[in-house]
Amino acid sequence: MLILLLVSTLLLINLLRTMTNDLPFVFGKAAEGEHFTDRTQETEQLKMNFLHGINSIIISPRRWGKSSLVAKVADQVKDEASIKVIRMDIFGCRTPQDFYKLFATELIKQTSTHVEEWMTTAKHFLGSLVPVLTTNTDPYSPFSLTLRPTVKDFCEEVLTLPERIAVEKNVRLVVCIDEFQQIGDFVHSVDFQKLLRKNWQLQQHVSYCLYGSKRHMLMHLFNQSSKPFYKFGEILFLERIPLSYWKPFIIDRFAQSGKKISEAVVEELYQYVDGNSSYMQQLSWIMWSMTSHEVTHEGLELAKSRILEQNQPLFQEQLDKLSAYQLHFLHAVADGQGDRISHKEIIENYDLGSSANVAILKKTLISKELIDTFDSKLKISDPILHHWLQTTLFHSL
Ligand SMILES: Nc1ncnc2c1ncn2[C@@H]1O[C@H](COP(=O)(O)OP(=O)(O)OP(=O)(O)O)[C@@H](O)[C@H]1O
Ligand SMILES: [Mg+2]
Image 1: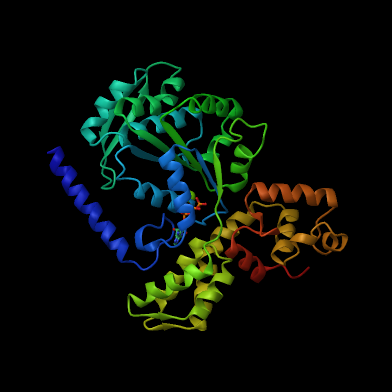
Image 2: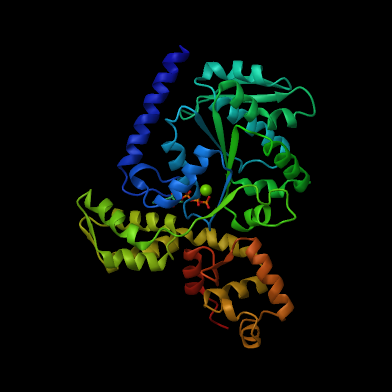
């Protein structure tokens, strides 16, 4: 019965996957297979790290392609008998306890070959956590494994789990943790980081690949000499995918469905979204879905207004939470005044208070990931928010 359920679930998942692969563009999830372009050098570099047990940290602005890159490399090494890649996303973890439970659960699940093995693996490797198996209605994940602690202190047992599994199964593990910046928000975060580092650096058969969506929080964790994770591994700063890769990629995706787009339109799109990978795919999708034959410059203009419209409620909600000074600051940056922000005339024109206030505003907006330095210029992090701010500017100033 269990086998039957498993087989039908796998068939359904494959069907859904095939349907997704038919789409010319993807966004909102990792780009894989034919939806993935470039990153050849980064793929090689990360693959070498995976194969040779070197810890990696991947940092880039939002939605440039960290998770997609890790997914690609994990896929490339999946046939290596001596390596097993474990992937987890700790976005939902708010406490160390959440982290330990997720970490242990994913390790158990992903190092077992089938569901029946989850329970035996968990019982074999963990004494302080009792496994419980439940069924779900979700076809993508019909079973859940929950680990219930029997004692208060189970952290060392969990943190040493990868090494113990690796040694017993005679493989090397690469543990990839997405949204790793979450640990920076835990209470007593530095103590927690010390504990992770202390355990992980002793492991001979396990390496870690750590990445996440908040560039500044990750920089704080990895780039400050006072922090436990300083020099934990090789830091890969992901760059934009160059236009020279997007041109053939997008033109090809259109051509495969009998549609056309010119190099000039792709170029214009790239400028508009400042090379952001996710928006390149999303706007291409909008243009593709709105045209039956060939996308023109007008098609791109329509797609731009569509994306601005779609994002409007989201942006509005984000900005509603800001103070008047913070809003003024954003408008100044959207107006291209980022580099002159502390000039007297900009402070006056945009009503930013004092120069001391400007410094505080800048720090706060960076920590909210609303602004950032790109190509040595202070810019609005989200390129579509940048355009939206420009169109909705309180140009009453
Ligand atoms: N190599 C690639 N080729 C084509 N498109 C890509 C590539 N990498 C990323 N994308 C596009 O960008 C989107 C976001 O990618 P991904 O989720 O990997 O980025 P991320 O950096 O992990 O994002 P976040 O900062 O939110 O964690 C994908 O859904 C896809 O549309
Ligand atoms: Mg990601």
